[in-house]
Length: 377
Image (cartoon, rainbow, N blue to C red; front, side, top):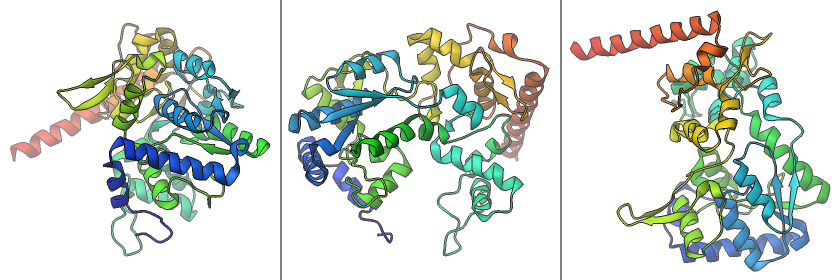
């Protein structure tokens, strides 16, 4: 076990394999421990309106009916998610200080994952600075970072090195500004500790956080409880089905597939921030679904865009300019689905966008030729 960690990956796998009824009792125990430490009036449920936090709120209020829930209204949710969150009793709505467009203009677009976006953002600074912190991020992106034993680091991100030279800024700051900051402000103002519904298997960073702090992070600088951490997606859906829970309309219904032996939703599988491209490699039709479910919102996301004073592509007054982002990423093999009923490139593109995309297309073609030549040797 790594120094300072409470659990190992094996611990997590064992807990994830447990039957749902045992997981429920373990989660209830974590919640009870959190409330015993801070009191019912000293905690709150972070409620996004999504399926995970819906399960969390149900479990918490079965035990403590009067605990407050807090919904951070970022404006980035599916409309039905926001309506559902605000429809629940004793839910306080808070808002971020900046809009999503303002966050992109100041920091950059959220791409791939928080970990990758932070690495790219810091690595770009490493190209312009001799500070060790930035240089390490650059080494990670180039695949040359090593661990304490001199071995190649497991945290290298060389797969995403091409993002270093993307014609737009990339950043991990969106979640910090839109969600974490307003939540931390609320927690500090009212001296309340959050209970959140994240799962450890959603990302490497969340897994590491659980391994380090467990479900109840009493010793963290900003204490937080994650009593569902060791659940998996199927547990969430099974709980919803067995308890006949109401969920946001974006998910439609939860059904069980005898063939696949698992539960799934007939609508959106995941919701989260609908304008965000974090996790896009595992959810490549996210934008296409948005075009079907919320065509006006999808149009705002895709249309517009311009090159700013920094030389990078950024949102314009009439849209976020994702059409160019997606076209550029797809030339690097990401395969993001997007319906082309509207010729965004023709309407909002210019000579520079055409040159950039043509250049990337030529590079992609040359790489394919190299692979083909290698196969023929």
